[in-house]
Image (tube, rainbow, N blue to C red; front, side):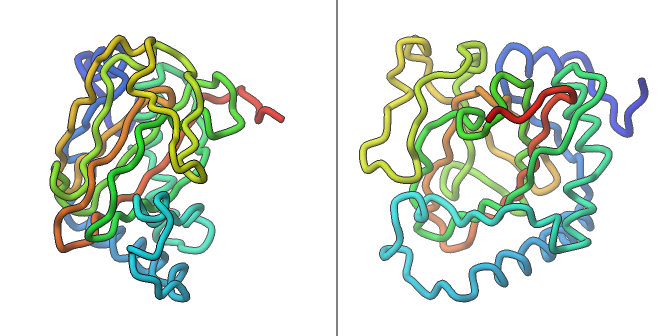
Length: 232
């Protein structure tokens, strides 16, 4: 099977072993500008009525501004969400012949935004054990000072751990202390605009706080293997 972008075996092997991998320069600088502007417009429209300062928001809201299913309301964002290069990379990483788009979302971390609580994505969604991968697409350079992602290498092989309630609990489960992780520390991953960071649905991850004066602008798409049904 041919794909618009063919990964080398090293990238697939790293994802298989570590649960995350970076594909550098998958998107062009012109695409980053165009898609970034479209996502900015959607986020601005959806949050126009929220005039609160970040200090007035909940701990979850201080971690990031979350806007979902932007493909439904923006034709430009739909091009990104349905990009064949992203879908092809997702299929290769999951080692599946066919994949489906589960969702897209903007995750914008405001200046002064808190670190995101460590968690696994897949436990939040009604898809059971379906093979799943997320594409994390930054529109700006990301580093440890403005909200870079960090991942616990190999944690995806632990399967679903105790759910971390990042939305409502003031003292969510400390998944980094889970015995299954054997004390392995998260690895911070820097990225440039155009790079895409991929992580497995069960890979434990978090994002650092945003100590910069600018918004950390990131868009994500999530894919799962075809043939799996929504769990009721």
